[in-house]
Length: 184
Image (tube, rainbow, N blue to C red; front, top):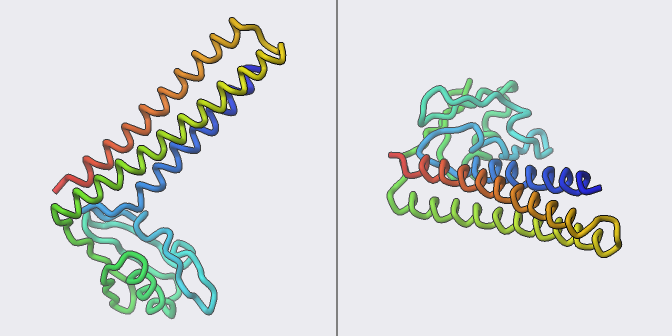
């Protein structure tokens, strides 16, 4: 019964960490990454379609995103969607679209580092809430005489250790992203 609670908490905490990775992937650094354009929706024949379903996306250079549509008739729409989505000027040569990522200004780097810190702190709060819910569930089990006080104490300690390990992972992800942003 305790194992079931711990397994559920573990999976919920893993989802929080995965979500942070996805959130931070779309924050622009001075380096090109396909994640910058992955979530862009393109008006393709009247339907909003994810860019990844219309084209292959690669980063041949550190400051260049190369988008090669499978259907060349979608070039103009993809170009419009990129401009609206990430506010960069794509260059269309009738075969591929090139998006050059300009270097970030120092002020913008500081803003992005603050944004990363804010998102990391939000995820820490989520983890603490999951931890609180788990310990409350264990206390309820002890109150209902499903587990003993000793089992509650040891299980609570395991929940704390689990929570600490996930908070460490989140901190590491945030530090890596901040380091990437501050890189010139």
